[in-house]
Amino acid sequence: MLYGQVKLLRSTEQKIKRYSSGTKELLVMSIKSQSADDYLVGVISDTHGLLRPEAIKVLESTDLIIHAGDIGKHEVLETLRAISPVYAVRGNMDVGGWAHYLPETEVVEIGKFLLYVLHNAHELDIDPAAAGFNAVIYGHTHLASIDKKSNVLFLNPGTAGPFRAPITVALLHLRGSSLDAELVELNL
Image (cartoon, rainbow, N blue to C red; front, side, top):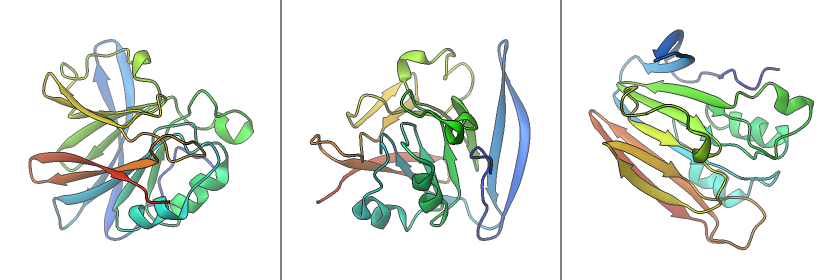
């Protein structure tokens, strides 16, 4: 099974196209709803092989899930795919045959919005504002944050893995032309 593929649910159509950003060509997978422009995206990162029931509960109401890397094992992705379509990128700790199929970066188009996903924001090698991205989603630091730079939302959902840091996931609300992020601390 290729872990970069998306299982589509509800009344959606999958479209693959090429997106050009300067000299870098990116594969864009988009999910288009046939009837709504209101999306709820669950964002999770740094699970390191542990998918907590509290995280699953938050993600159950989402239309799409993005995992920003350091997944830990393929069973995490399988469980997430049972909830909603999943886009995932490979983190620095994702090793082994199952992780080989994960891309290092992903471009996700949802309605009018373009999201750039990678694990480590320090490895961002494009200007997201100039390339037309609305958000950059990343992980790696285990520190949840929401920031805006040059009209681009930068979202790190923190860690949902086996750590003592605050255990968090994020929700991304896409309504019409509005893009809002919310951090959710999990009560363990």
